[in-house]
Image (cartoon, rainbow, N blue to C red; front, top):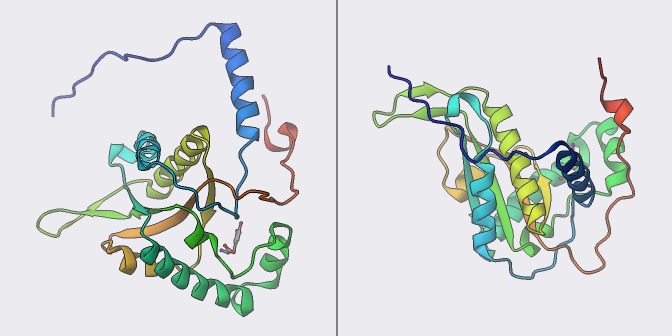
Length: 221
Ligand code: IYR
């Protein structure tokens, strides 16, 4: 096999001071990201969603196999089906399936089985993890580090949408196989999460929670 390499082009080179300044500015910007559960129905340009997904798909991933598929849902009828499917699972989760410790841990977030945002938000981006590839003959081929790859891409996506001024919610009803059926995705793809996307509702409230301090989450040698 012949490897082909090209020069690293377009890599940004900032001076030391600019780098320090930019990193601080980015940190402040990211502090303004919050997970949002109350959405306005205001329209969002599809091109913004497409650009954000295209940015997400630039994420590093296992062997560059890009083991993901993004379904953009804007159709109200499909959003309704997704809400019905998710609320069915969530009713079970909140009414006996979830261990008490889990329910108690979720308490500060104020979540319950009602998921109106699945219909209210202008877009649901349903992210699928391609567990393995199927070739034209239907033979299976391995993908690598699929969970890690899709997780990194999802982080890029959330960041790209925040950069564009859109709020998101990572929503994971469990199990999520109803999404394959509604969205007609093949069985080699596993739903990873639903990224609810739109503008926060007016007077939107978020839980009063805090983040761990740097020293609690990092160690320097
Ligand atoms: N999927 C449920 C429960 C839930 C679980 C976790 I972990 C959260 O961080 C938030 C919610 C729900 O969406 O309500």
